[in-house]
Length: 227
Image (cartoon, rainbow, N blue to C red; front, side, top):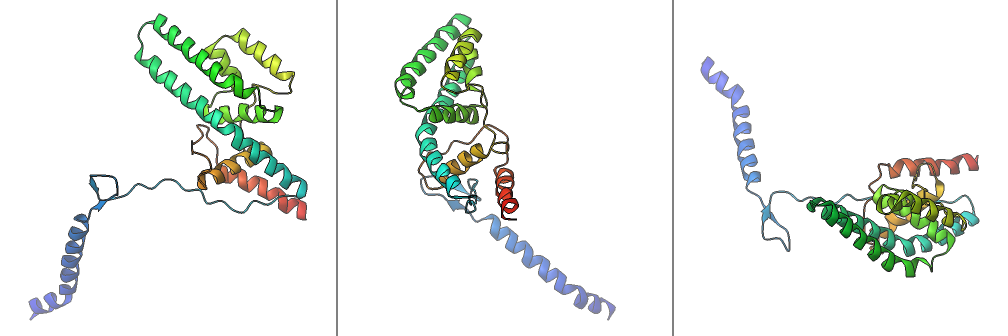
C-alpha cells in the first residue's frame, strides 16, 4: 500500500519530466534555413538595432543648425568611411610584407592614391564641412587627421598641414566626442538615423562611447532650460 502511495504521489513528476525531455529533444531537431544560405542553422544572429527617440531642440535656431549639420554630415561621411577602409587595407597589406623597402613603396602608393582621390573633392568643401570631416575621420579610425598625416608622411608635414588648416579655422587635431560636444552628439544622431533609413552605409565607430549616455546628457539640458 505504501508503494502504491509513493507511486501516486510522485507519478506526476515522472510524467512531467518525461514530457519535458521529449519537448527538449524535439526542439533540438528544429533548424532554420536563411534565404541565400545553403547551411541550416538552429539560431539566427541579429544585427544590433538602435532605438532612437524623437530629438528635441531648445529653439528654432538650434533646429536649423541641426538641419544644416545633417546636410554637411551626409556629404562628408563617405570620405571618412573611405579613408577608414583604405587605412585598414594598408594595415592588412603591410602585415603581409616582410621587407621594409616593400612596405615603404606600398605606403607611398597609398599616399598618392589618397591624395589624388581626395584632393579634387576636398577643395570643394567649406570650412565647417572640412572640420566635420576631420571629426568623422577620428570617429572611423580612432586616430586624428594630424596623427594620420604624421604616421603616413612625417611630423613636419603634419605640422605644416595643421598650420595651413588653421588659416581656415580648421584643426586637424580635433577629436570626435558626442558626450563632451553637443555638435558631435548631433552628428552621431544624424548618422544613426541615416543608417536606419539606409541613406548612408553603416560603418560603426571604433571609438568607445555610449550613444545613449550622450543622448541622456544632451536631452537633460532641455529639462533644465524649461524650468
